[in-house]
Image (cartoon, rainbow, N blue to C red; front, side, top):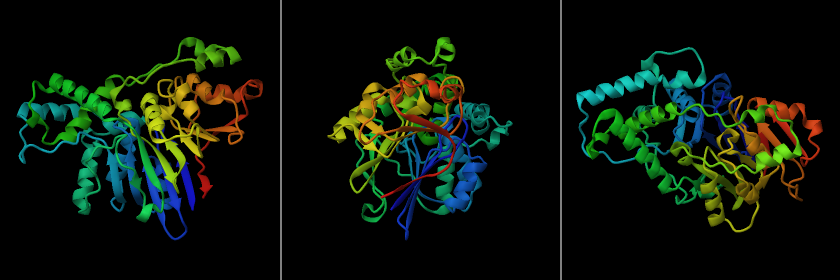
Length: 399
């Protein structure tokens, strides 16, 4: 069987596709899509033939969901087999709507002010009525297709392994994050903001809960959207062994409830761990799950998709001691903050092994930090053998 991974540039966000091909059959997985641009559209139409067996939205942040929303909206012939997406999944209390007129008006205003799709991708502004929530798009898809594709049970680190294809012919997914506790933390943040925006509430307020929930989480995330991770010294300091060792010793932790609630999972084939996809998950939760579900470390994987565009808050020395690979994929990121030197140092400074004789880092876009390493690569002789590439060419593995 062949496994083809494609990381498609979508600005600051993620869009990854995993195509599992055993000659006679294919199983296609899309993991997030921050922007449905021409590159994604071409791949979905020409390579996937508008067929996605499993659509995984790791968490609710704009740079992971907006392209999915636009894709579903703009491709009427798109087939989606199943969707994994942790939104506010509660059973309705009643069949009729019970929000007050004042609350409904507030929701309409909030949605209009977000301009969800246009704001994240940096395109020209679109009309507020054209902005669509992902939960709305999925629900409309289900109504139009007559098929239920969104399984409403939460995906957590306690979720049973997901078999891909008949008799797991395409392998399995083993879920590492989030925990139920982390989803509950996000729910509490939602309830707090709902109360602040919409007055005191009762449990009946959430009849149309998935769209209200997504809307408010988008609002919360927008308030704290800008993240400056680095001290000014990081952008001007010489790339010395001392600098990299200092960066490596950073012990930052993920603080946002939305990212801590991100899905992370390992794709296994023939019961062997093959690829690790971390979304924007917390390194603490991922470490706990890996130690709980596996026995021998480090796990050698064919590919590791690093969490949160290489943010310093989502990669730790402990995590890098538990997993290793010849290939690290780091999509998206911001020019002046991510991928961070803290994360790059944690990946690159480890000794090579019999299985890892060279570490390749694949980025979907250039950034100041990546560019500095590329320009100074011949001087970084203290770093074990590595190379860096910035492209969107598919990566193929044969099993």
